[in-house]
Image (tube, rainbow, N blue to C red; front, side, top):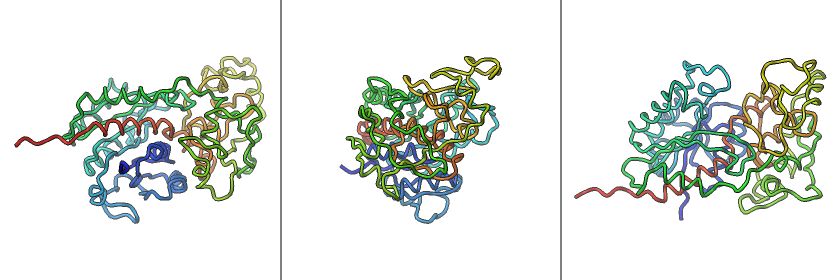
Amino acid sequence: MSKLKAVSLFSGAGGFCEGVRLAGYKVLCAVEADPHACKTHSSNFPDVPLFRGDIVEFLKSPYRGVPSAADLKSAGVDLVYGGPPCQGFSQIGPRDLKDPRNLLYREFVRVVHALKPRAFVMENVPNILALKNGHYRELIVEAFRAVGYRRVAVLTLTASEYGVPQDRKRVFFIGVRDGLTLGDLLERVATDAFAAQKCGRAVTVWEAISDLPDETSKDDGPLPYPRRPKGGCTPYQRLMRLDSSTALLDEDWKASRLEQGNELFNHHTKDVEARRLKIIKALKPGALGDSLPKALWAGTRAHKWRRLDPDRPSYTILAQMHRDLSEWVHPRADRWITVREAARLQSFHDGFVFKGSEWQQLKQVGNAVPPLLGLAVANAMRDVLRKTRRRRRRD
């Protein structure tokens, strides 16, 4: 059976792409504007042609090495997927309704209209459903209906239910092209496909990162790869580690993109000032800023300071980590989490290396769709596509 074919938009570092790849799709090309994220994407997906630039220009003129609109239509695209920037919709920040990024979904719709894939998936933050009393939700649904995708379902998924050690919620707009029969409501088919993939229990922070060393890289370079814990690795750690193979990820494949041998990359973090170190030391696992003595911190925002709870999934990993890590304190060590630990909590395996400055790496990790959540979405869309049939024309 031939692989399903996909096109990635707003690809970032490639979290969604990694999930789609793990699901067995062939990614025909990807689109990303941020030059630092492009370096990471190209390093981890060297076989995927990458359009490096504003999506507004994608498909409008030839671009070196990237298939044209005609080429892609000829190949037959099964799925277009991606997540337009969500800062304008997010509860974090000013939620500016005039933010031009709020309209980037139109470019996603334009590409879908041009390529006419059998289906699409567009990811965003949950707040997009509530903003302006559902105004943007309806705008997006109507835009897809206008270009030949009248069946659109909107589902909210929690990453921890699909193997990601993080209680991250995201919204997915999914649609199937007009002219294809499905036999049941799209929302019901998709919901059943997601339900079949849910995990029995959530992976905790400590199950995800306890095998990584407390010591971090001081020069942002790689460290010797850590030995397996004496008590053995957790199932999640075996999935992530370079020296373990699972049915989903083989150790040789995980290490295939590394320039050197098995080393621990991206295990570095920001320095901690003496004043902040006192605050960190006073924070107990799972505690918030409002638990601190007033002499250390008398702020009003309880979530300004947070230490991860080792016995629960992480709260949401966000791109704002690159500015301030005070909400992401290591559950046991008196420091911030590292880029690699954040990547683990996003379900990136250790062979997925991030490029650019530490600032850029943290931003890329926080912006990404967790690969295991992307895998669940790609698997669900495969189930949807398997059940579609071309509608027969009447004589």
